[in-house]
Image (tube, rainbow, N blue to C red; front, side, top):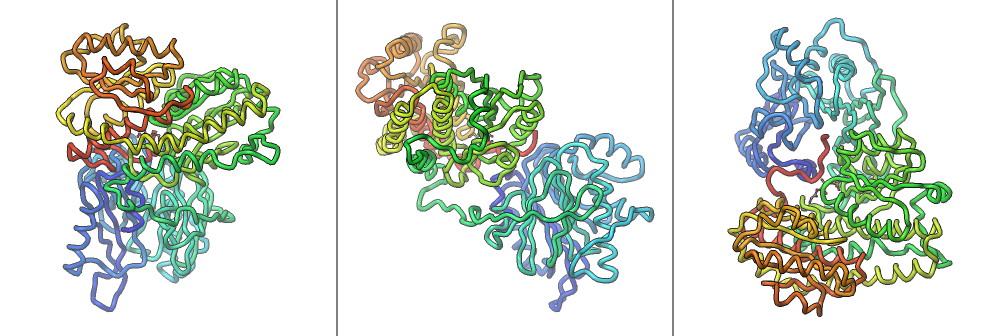
Length: 629
Ligand code: F6R
């Protein structure tokens, strides 16, 4: 249950566990399979389990599997929650991913008499596995399953053979874990394009979607590669390829996943993470200069000649990370004079993008596990492009599958809505942009240093904004009844407007739209009505060509009845007469402004969500890490 709770960020609409029972001295059920499931957050499963335990229904056990779900096929109900069990109730399975040929397989299985009790794609796998497990013509597999003997060992081999057989029939993406009451000392797992890691302990072993699940018990992890199958007993871990040939395990250390994040006195993780941003940004940009004062990215082990020869950069990411990419475009194009495209990862792959060996692809991801982004980088690498990943999670799939990794040092982000990862991502793209400008000869070393020094001042400016949050909070608390908010921004303020609107949608369930301020008169202004809240991100007055136009936009919406909330630089009095409320940020170079102007928008959404009584850390329908396409 502790492991599951560490993975709850992946989905929390229902959860379940399956426990194999063994002979025990207290008279608990032996040779049994106990399955407990509950809709909603993990606390509901905990309660159901406690009730069962009080009634003596939880057996002594050597193995168990559990799952927290983010619904893809079928509503979040107990029937659709995992684990799913075979018709005889003796075999259980959990699944992440999507089985793309589930419909065809279901039709075949129905024709053979299999009955389905859920709407999930997963249930076809349980039936297939159960059928193979009891098939007299099953292929044979014999390998190390330490600790199993006699009949149990034979059935263990059969379960592995069944998994090898079934996986060959599946299309799509999956991590599968299965156990059977016939082999209570064994868990068999398989993965294709979904994450799975093994934790190697002393007389105990673990499987998890990521290392956080077991890092409290062991820091010795084993990688499970694409299309590999794993058989785990308390004493052995056997990794094999899709044909069942045993492979050498590849161990790595997961010390970083050990500490469990706590709220440290903050009411929510999101509040805490918003307030961690000065440190997250500082840590991300720290120690980047070598002894000669040159920006050095030791992690970026792509030959400088390739970086110099690149003729285009494509940034791929999703959601908030994609907005970080939009901010990066302004800086990188300006500094490096290289065309930068920013593409939602899920659109990139299917539009037949022009990618060559001279294309530099930058993938931005907090989790490093976003399936859409993983698929995009695979596609890019197939075309010969080099991929630099900006990720927050060391050892994640994206970091492993990229040519180079630039880590954001934001620390674990627990709240589902991204905050500190966003600003750390932007900071990392600035570092990357300056590095490229230096390598490609667009900026001299002293110019790069100058930009870096100004960047180093950002954390204290973020703190300045955080210390003056009261106006933001008060404004948010007056807006619990609004049902629509419009966000406007121009230049680097535009992605900030998009991010502000996304935070409001996610946390407050209020319809919110971010527009490029210049686009207003081309249509969206028709939305403005008496009292319509409009949040405007105003550029610095030191860039009058941008500033004056946005101030005009404020006047235009005000004239049509809007309630204007303005994010403006300290000392910019030109907005005062047109703004109902002003959120102040300190003066800073234009390209760095998003790191400051997004802060009040994060706080605003967080405070408003709390005032509405919403679950700030785990908003409805979302998952922290979107591991399906
Ligand atoms: C929004 C949010 C999401 C993620 C997106 C990508 O608050 O968190 O939009 O930014 O799902 O996730 P990562 O960065 O893990 O690839």
